[in-house]
Amino acid sequence: METTLTTAQAKPVQTSLKNTPMIKLTDIEKVYQTDTIETVALNRVNLTINKGEFVSIMGPSGCGKSTLLSLMGLLDEPTHGVIEIDGRALTSYSDKELAKVRNHKIGFIFQSFHLINDLSVLDNVELPLLYRAGLSGKERRQRAVTALEKVGLSARTKHFPSQLSGGQRQRVAIARALAGGPEIILADEPTGNLDSVMGEEIMDLLLGLHREQGTTIVMVTHDESMAHKTERLIRFFDGSQVS
Image 1 (cartoon, rainbow, N blue to C red):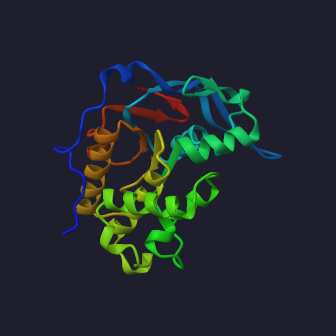
Image 2: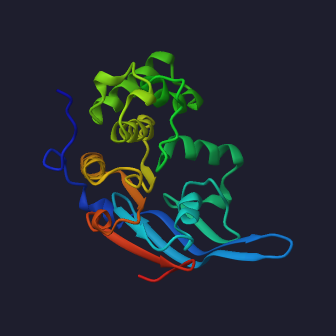
């Protein structure tokens, strides 16, 4: 039988880490502009996520949640303001250093899984590690195998995404995020495409991984019940933080 981490098995995060900022946003604005329209996606956001926190972000569609996650993940740049990751402002990084931070420090989990159908489960998990300098093929494969064991899919390594359920595909996506050993996991609606039972299983898995490894997790969600399982709930409306 496949095994997964549970909250009972998980180890608590060291309290001392909880007061150390991992992600800090200061006066962040993000404006999208065309020839005729200016859209303010984020308006003067000031937010600190501490090391080892599990934070959920909620708000109506179009309020800036996914934009915020993209900025935290270094997939986009703010129009104004300063982003700091682990105490260092991103403006001080070269493009090469930013790419290294994305690849080494941050793991992404998406609502739509973003798995490659022509690759096996194991190859999907291993794929981001191909861009990790200094890792041998053997080391990449072992990291992928270990990550799949953590999410209870060690018996599915040779399967393809089309042969898996939605919950299993999301577990593969989580394993892919874990394989690089990130300090930060950014999850955009990780239970959004799943039924309630599968959604609960994925949430329990994230909670277990968080407590065992002390990973900082920021999760965007529309589900109040999932959000209230995290340590802190932040609400956005029209590009601004309201709570």
